[in-house]
Amino acid sequence: MTPSLALNLALALLLLGMAGWAVLVRSTQAAVIGFMVFGLLLTLAWARLDGLDVALTEAAIGGGLTGFLLLGAAVRLRSVEHRATLQAPGLATRILAALAAGSVTLLLAFAVLTLPSPAPSLAPAVAENIAMTQVGNPVTAVLLAFRALDTLLETLVLVLAMLGIWSLADDRVWGGRPGFAIAHDASGILHYAARILVPIGVVIGGYIFWIGADDPGGKFQGATLLAAMWLLLVLAGLRDAPRVSSQALRLWVVLGPLVFISVGLLGSWLAGSFLGYPQGYAKLMIVTVELALLPSLTLILGLLIMGAPKREIGR
Image (cartoon, rainbow, N blue to C red; front, side, top):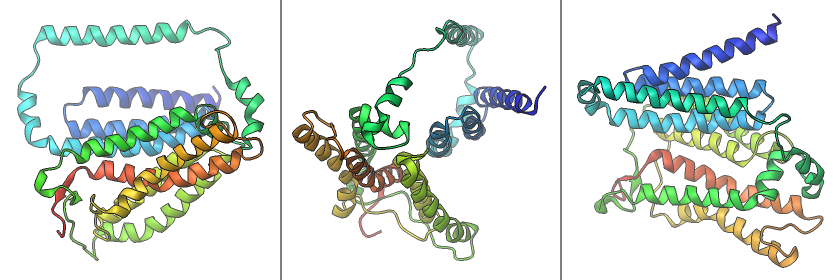
C-alpha cells in the first residue's frame, strides 16, 4: 500500500467517523463541533482531489461560518436541550427513521454506482471558451461569465437573508446594533488573538481574493476570511457592531449587487445580452464586479452571524 493510498483511506475513515459522531451524539454542542471538524476534514479531501476552490469554500463557509451559526444556535437551545432529551422517540419512530436513512443511503449509492463513464462534463466547453473571458481560473470564468446570472441571484439571496434576520428584531431596537455589547478586556486572550491574527488574516484574505482571477480563490473565500477577522475584532471588544440604520453600512451592503446589475446592463448595451462582456473588456468587467462584491459580501456574512438588532441606538 502506497503512502498516498494509506492517507486517502485514513481520511475517508475519519470522514465517516466524524459524520457518524455528528449524527449519533446526544449533545447538540458536541454534534456541532463534530460537524465543524467534519468540514475541515472535507476540506482536506477536496484538496486531495485537486478541487482547491471547493476546498477553500468548504473551509471558509461549510465548516467555518456555517459551524459558527450552528454553534450559536446550540448555545441558545441549551436551556431546552435537557427537556428535549427526556422526550425520547418510541421504538417505531426509531425504526422508521433508520429505514428512511438507509433508503436515502442506498439511493445515493445507486446513483453514484450507475453514473455514466466517462461522466458528462462541461469542462471541455469551459476550456474551449475561457480565453474569451481573459481569466485563468476556470471557476471564476464559470461563476462570473458562463453562469453570472446565477451568481448575481445568489448574492441577492444573501442580501434578502440578512434583511429577513433584521426583520426579527423587536420594534424598540430596530435600527440599533446586532448582538450584545462586549466589554474590552486588554488582558484577555481574545484581545491578544485579535491583535495578532487580524492583520495576518486581512492580508491573506486580500491575497486569496486577488489571485482568484487566475488561481484558486476569489471573492467568496476572501470575503469569508475578512468577515471572520471582523467578527474576531467584535468578539474581542475592539470594535462594536454597526448600527443597521447606518446609511454608510447599507450603501456598502448594496454596492456589490448594484455594480453587478450595472455591469449586466452595460453588457446588454455593448455585447447585446445581459451580463455579456464585449471583446477585450471581459477581465476588466469581471474584476470590477469582484472588487465591488468583496466589501458587500464581507459585511453581509458578518451581519448574518451577528444576527438581529438587540440594542437600541446609542448603546
